[in-house]
Image (cartoon, rainbow, N blue to C red; front, top):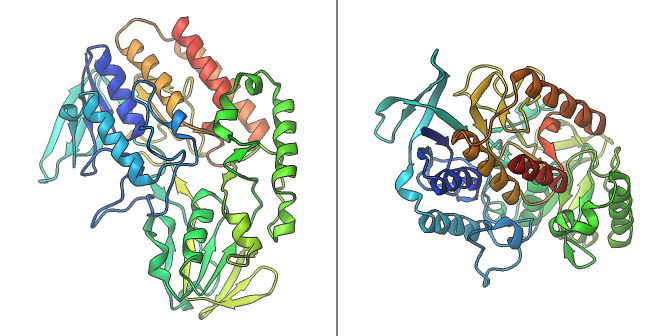
Length: 432
């Protein structure tokens, strides 16, 4: 059985390791010059989300692979350099590097009439090859295409400074002595605002919608360790929500006290932002919260409340769109931006196509992708069967109904998972 794994980041290496452990023949195609995925610092001519100040928000105990823990000398929340080095060390330890083709970009994946898959790729020399595989595992992640407001606020064409996306941001040192507006309140926005504030003359954080800001630890315990703790997973969802809301009230109080908008949704009804720094920096005046940008008038940025500030640069930290240009249209992302996969892994109409890591948990993703990869390896090996397509679609419909009730019809809601519940479901599949 020959399998193509697309991507050699954390998820792709987990898939490769699971296949290798079962003696399944595979090749892993990676367009970057090295393994490591988003944790690699992009080189010349590359783009990527690994800015220099990037650190883990999840504890190293859960972020490392089960068979290859992160080194004890690393801090609890290692830097992106440490994570990238760790991922390469894992690939070497697991004997995967000889199976990874670097600088090889996948251009097309199409199913043939006999159920096999033709993968067309291009290597660093520009040579194009077409290879046939029995199965394909997509592990290329979902931080792919930068998402910018369209159109930009009126007058953006009159702004004389750079207007960047976070994918093009590397270090706050580049903005020394300048006046910078960072847009957003997600993980990259608060990290970048914190980094910029150490160098810039003035740092503004423009926030359109309130999000729940959570410290990395509550009661001295990393939040991802809490998410997997038996005492927490045994609670009902309502009890979990009440526990976290009460802990946040003690730890940081109301976000409006910091000049940030209060979230318009309960905790766990949308993405959360994990940060130990941003609220303290706001309290110390290093970062100034502002509402959404309404318009530009030259280098004057006019905010929704009518106030304005002069600025030299804008950094939009407005996330990414899921994009798989090498796959057939509407696979796996439908017209409404909804991902429809059985158990968040299998395309029901294309049972030889699997996705590993196309999920968004509150907490560490590693245990989840390891469980996904192990289940997929057993599927590939023929050890366990899939339900018929109708059964898979019924599970998908039930899941999407549940996430819509909880998160609404927001882009990306269909890949949200609860760590404890999803891990338990995957383990039950393993034992079925």
